[in-house]
Length: 272
Ligand SMILES: [Zn+2]
Image (cartoon, rainbow, N blue to C red; front, top):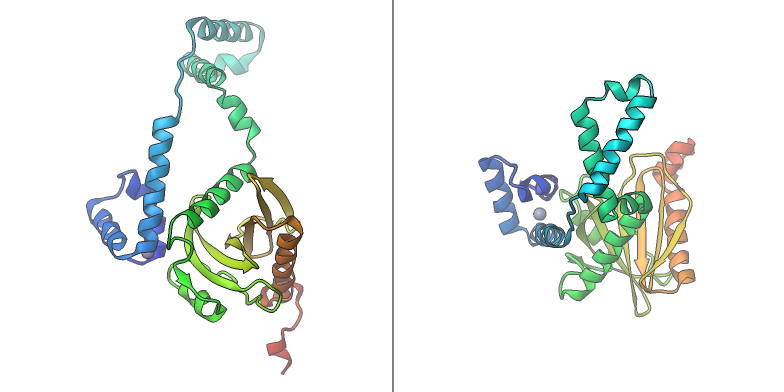
């Protein structure tokens, strides 16, 4: 079993949903592969923390009764739609709704944009990688020709790994990371004494090429997409320096073979 397969089975493995043979194969891979083992341990810690800290609330009887009677009024005054809803379903809906009001989940669901959730994952990953010795990189090298092929067989895509040394952003290395429910590439760059982590994974939806900025917990975060990849960059660098790093990546992608193919332009390899 390779890393790609092991990571795709990780949720099923942790939720004990795999058949015995597959489970043993995943276990064998985790025993042999420190990178996947680390991700598995992080996921276990996360689900344990959620299980221990998530709050469950039963709606107070008065609240549940109030919602039920409000539904009765809607039943009586509206036309067919509510009458077609089975009674147990509207009751269940009222209880769920009551539970949401009671726990503030309504606010949580409505008030948290996907970008905000992803930003929290990115910050947590960035902090964790620097807290644990040896966690920052699975492959340590300033040579993009060493780092890029390391991802072969570990991911189902080839992340762009650039040499930006002359621009002041030498490469430190790379590692596997697990964000937004999928394996992603984490590339580590440096600018003076500051680390930059760049998370990359394939874009499946229409690219949002604009450069978006966030500041959270003292970290600068920039994110954008192009025709092939999503990019999230995080650092404790000042915003201007991190932005210029992101601009370099955007310019490189815009001049790359994929972008040229999309625009129908010949590449240097076609001009010889
Ligand atoms: Zn692995």
